[in-house]
Amino acid sequence: MAESSGSNKAAERIGYITRVQSFSACHRLHSLHLSDEENKEVYGKCNNPYGHGHNYKGLSCCYTNQI
Image 1 (cartoon, helix red, strand yellow):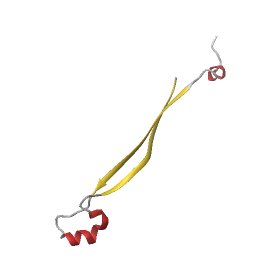
Image 2 (image 1 turned 90 degrees about the vertical axis):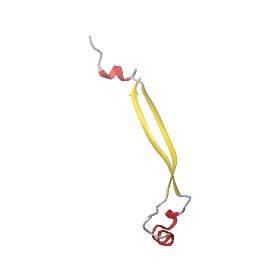
Image 3 (image 1 turned 120 degrees about the horizontal axis):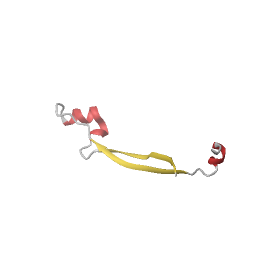
Image 4 (image 1 turned 60 degrees about the horizontal axis):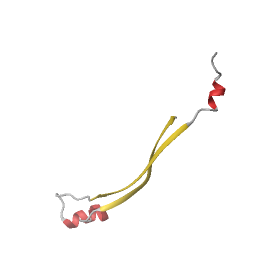
């Protein structure tokens, strides 16, 4: 005889695997068709020859499954 689904729930275990990722990215906006001064005027701090960066934190992915 089959058990009711209610009695199986007590024995059911769920597992979670979560990955949280942080990273930094850098870019420079610069046009070869513009002078250095025009690039600075148009792109501002994003025209820095050493790049302009952003930090991304807390990107996460979670996998859930019955154990």
